[in-house]
Length: 369
Image (cartoon, rainbow, N blue to C red):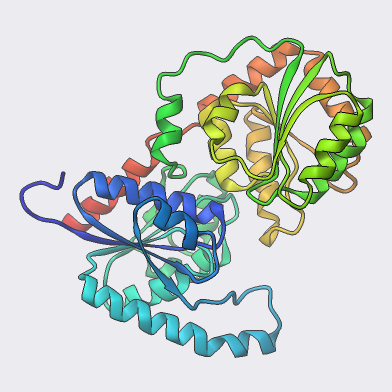
């Protein structure tokens, strides 16, 4: 609880993807634990419209639209919506009595950060990627504090003169995930059949799905078990490929209980989004990482490279990512079970289970200074 009777009012802004919404919810959980009030601000069309209410938090959905990666005419057309979003955020922060604003990035965060700046409300930025997102880079000069997960991000912010405001905190993760692995025993000793978790994100990853469909006939059913989050569009054909190959595999469109799957698996095959790599580290789960090739500024390659350098993962280039490449990579790992254990230990050393609490406490100190 907040000391005495003082209750602070926080705004946590950002959204669009799970990589933004999950850290926002993790911070909201920590803020609520203090006994403070929290309001989340996001977009009208992102995952936050479903996930935030489901988690029991209030959401102001702003008519924000992406600005980067669009044509000039599209950006011009988005100006009225952006102005409306800024006005709505500004007005709501006033009625809410906001004391502090935290941006977790994404285009939906920009109107809230602008509004907070206009109201002279102190701002913090949470940047989970090795290469900072464009929204956070654009608004960094307004921030009192900047929290990062990777050393590369620290260096990039330092180049813009923000070195004295950057703190190495890690990515905020939900309490359920953190509690699942708090004090958890070591993983089982990896042995055949090896357990492979495949997760391309909340919507699946078409390239990974196609590669696994191609790989299925080349895999030994006695050597591998598979859990595959394939997305709704590819679920049936992926399941059919595994069934035809005689593999033991469970394929789902979406898995709501990822902590359970992390505990089950010996190895993950997945993208390299910031949230994913933070969760892999917390779970101590070694991985074959396939960075999404169209991510802004190729930041997933930088995220994956950090885990590879730490010995926690191997990176696979998606161009090309075929079944033969997948099979070769799996055989290389499974033929050396000790390597799996070593990669898992290296991943654990990167974990930051206290990130959400550290960020909130640092912001409180900033308010009190």
